[in-house]
Length: 116
Length: 109
Image (cartoon, chains in turn green, red):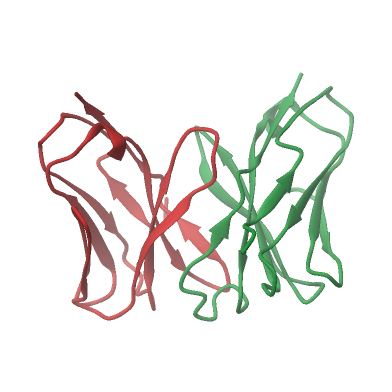
């Protein structure tokens, strides 16, 4: 079966712009979680969506938002980009909701965002 | 303060050596997971340990879950250059998966 697909793989944006990243989970998986990975902070949880509802949100400013569609595909948006938003953005899908015995998440290859 | 503390942060060893990576917490987890990540790619799940005291083996990798379900270890026997990567432990906490800071392993031939 197809894995988790993230697009685009690479992005270069200018400060102040906005960006939208996409994640298509494994077929049948209804939970999508987003993470930001940087060398200094490691993997930080952004938010999780299950059945089009945001179930949990990490400690990030309101510039970071997301949504999930009826086919479980998810998007995350970052507005008013800052240099510190440069990171690898990862999404992960699981069959049950996060925190309910998923016992294993499948990650996409990530989107490398560079803000200049 | 990380919920999951991993040690060591960095490990550089010769091919053929053994190593152990530790993942510790003051919290109890229903399960812990171990992932391996290569540069520019997403983490790949290696194993999930669920039962306190559980030991799982994956070829040269041995994973152990502490009796109290607060800690875990990853032992690699006879490391090979292909084992090089970032090793991450993770656990479900408050409806999300939280990660340790990771251990960067470099195996030199």
